[in-house]
Length: 253
Ligand code: 4HQ
Image 1 (cartoon, rainbow, N blue to C red):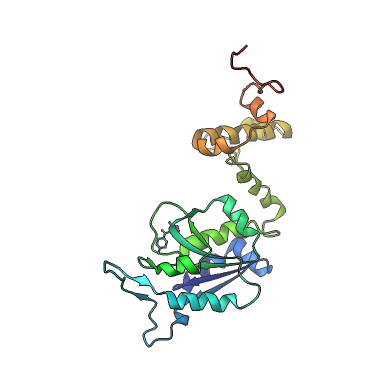
Image 2: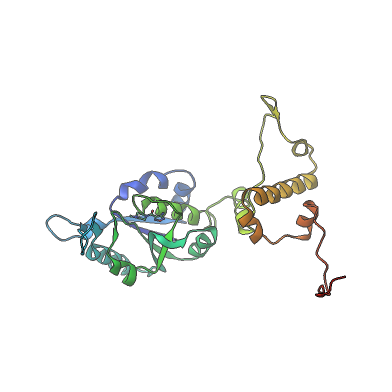
């Protein structure tokens, strides 16, 4: 997958892309991230990327011309981008489901704004998708872009090893992870649950599943409601299976 990032601060992307899994994915040729400095697409003496807002008011607005030129220059190289994404608090909330959609794309353009905002004509006539990573105010779209790159990269085929990839299935079924433990079995008197030391793989799998279900119910009831309980899940939670076949009548019994 190729990802082009348009930003006024390309240096912000260096370190996150040079470590761990993102570094490995790039070295393996599975992910190609190119940063482009929007200022390179200014042609005036002062290389101006922002200007005061029409109608007055505080702060500055990003000018449309350098952004259009930059995106159009990138888009002229094949393959054409599947999406041109802008980060803004009014965008669709970035969730695992969205990461999955983006991971199936060949090429993405991520547009990172600064200042009070971007000229509305960029939103209306250049951008295909607006995304928000959450309800808080950031100083720019660079951190959201890195969040999206990270979440999408780990979904690309071959990026995670065999051992790592199993964990990615968890969110897909809307459950949180079970608790993890490693050596020592007793740390300052805090012991590892007996079942994990038992060697009984069936019992361990059931314990982990029940922990996942219970902690999702307790900490994220919104996610729990999205999860489709299996018969095994119902048994683990001590719920009676729903009657199959004939529907209950309005009169009961
Ligand atoms: N922004 N999720 C970029 C955000 C934001 C968010 C405010 C967008 C500042 C310049 N973007 N402007 N939250 O807070 O995506």
